Image (cartoon, rainbow, N blue to C red; front, side, top):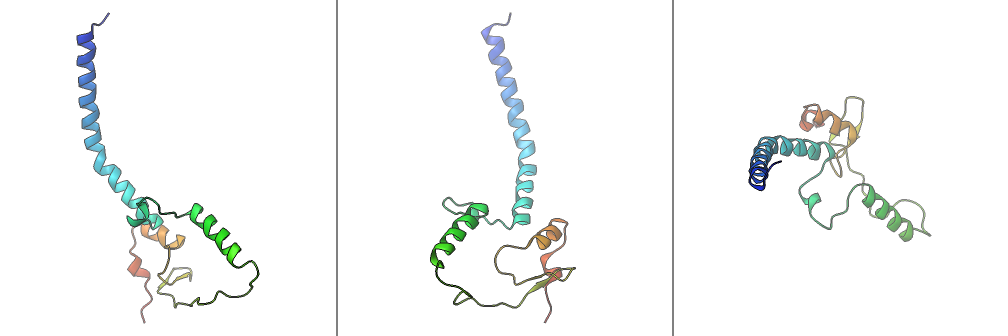
Length: 121
């Protein structure tokens, strides 16, 4: 049976190994996170506490919009149409406002630059 000193020695060795593994995997993990942030259009501002985005934000905004426009029909007042700045290989268009569309996210994740799809005027 092991004594307390042997067990404490093993704990120290394992903690040292864990620290070395953490250092090795840190840069790789940060890079993976940055790639996913770019693919989903997540900014550092989105990571701040109190910011709601994604499915929860859509549900909240849909509820608020429904409550506001309960009696009104038609187009939103003040909505402006913006000319597209980017065009995809299958004719998709994006104005450059809001979240990056899925077709462009997928192409950027494949290594292509967003500027490659800019519409030249």
